[in-house]
Length: 185
Image 1 (cartoon, rainbow, N blue to C red):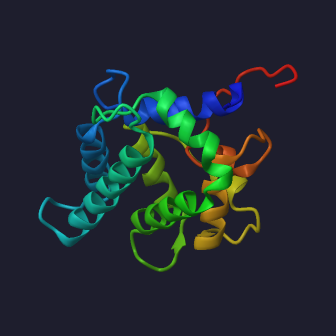
Image 2 (image 1 turned 90 degrees about the vertical axis):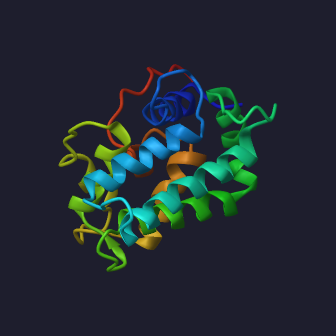
């Protein structure tokens, strides 16, 4: 069962992805996320970049729907997502697969690294608004080389989705949030 801490961080991402605020993730929510991301990256509809980003986001939707939609109503609740999170420790391939796809989406220039500017675009696409990431990126860049490698990003992504350690750098992969006050978790 997800801890209060896990619920808090996952709920923040869920709310950011729930574009219409109806309490469910549905195909149009992922399409809206893909459109925000493409707009932030300057990828015009019909362009190769737009097609790539849309494909990645909609692929994630297909994977999430298949893993989470227990009642097969083509929408996913926070509770259904948390049930998947509970199983991630035994299914690391799913987390690694989404990390790989997200890395491809974030690495706009295709150099095999995520720069602070590319990370900033990721967070603004998720949040749908201007967000300061200057404090967060150094927490993620543990080796202080000024970028995140594919391996670093995969580790951070896994720490976020499958982890329950408030001190793990991956806790902040989606940006700053106010974690719950934990008393004995």
